[in-house]
Image 1 (cartoon, rainbow, N blue to C red):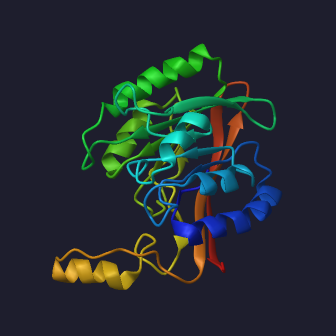
Image 2: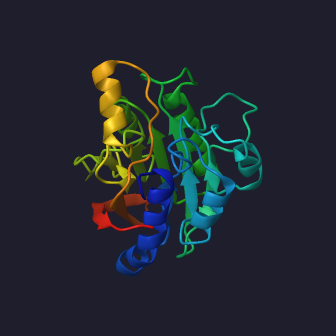
Length: 260
């Protein structure tokens, strides 16, 4: 599972590195977060297609889901692109899905949006509980939850809330990879934030000068995607297929990836 892909540079870096990652780790299933691909906000149908045709099984989203005009038809037609499940009823697309891994295992993936310091949204804890029951009803042996949230406390709380019920709970959104990857007491793999795939000499993917100008002047600034070498952040999780419990979690970090 790879963290938030930021801009065209991040997309190019993922597409460039994916063959080597697949060769090295031989994953049965690959998830990426794609809510920042289109200039830092949203995703395009073309970007989704490129990922899904090049080794990615599912794309999760977040609070920037709706920033591009073509995202609604994408959500309605492509079940492998997930928006947060705790949007109100009637929202286009789906917040979860069950998919077949390369080894034949049924993998249930859910996307949850936090509400601490975020826009008002339905209770992520209640929504996560409902999704777990849905996964069990579909006999999914592996359950993966992307918690797209601002605060570490909310992510950690959701991780413990789902411990023993989900195979993996991984945080996204803050773009800085945390060093707290571990197997929780009841067998759930957890990390507070996967990090990001994008320009490494940046402020969470954006040009430092524009971000610094905003912090120092308190005036609005247009944030542009940074340039230069990219990094790839993510995790590799090993699962006991018979139990659906994680047995190992390893952070992935690649730096100095040159992209066009």
